Length: 138
Image (tube, rainbow, N blue to C red; front, side, top):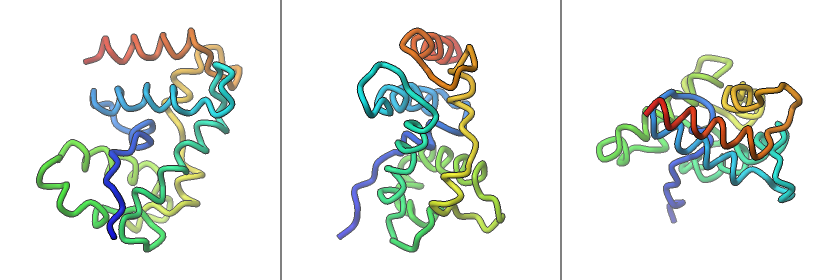
């Protein structure tokens, strides 16, 4: 049975400057607050990204690649662009796929942009500010 296609907010949260990615990135920050304290830490965002890995690895080969999204490429090219951007950002060995370990080690530019005061935490005001900045770019 195929896993449901989830347009991966993580790719989402990490990589492309496209408006859709930015929307997904803001939503990812909202969902990443695992303990519900209103603050997103780097660890919480990293855990949220990894939680999506199994849904993205549709062929269960231990890596996310374009092959995991065969049919969707024809119908949702913007989704494939987001996936490819995520893979390119984290693919440390250049094989065109992203393993769980590579995703865990990949940069988190959304977090870095949103954490305006550099304290390692994104509070509600910083989430609102990054959401507004993303909306202004659309």
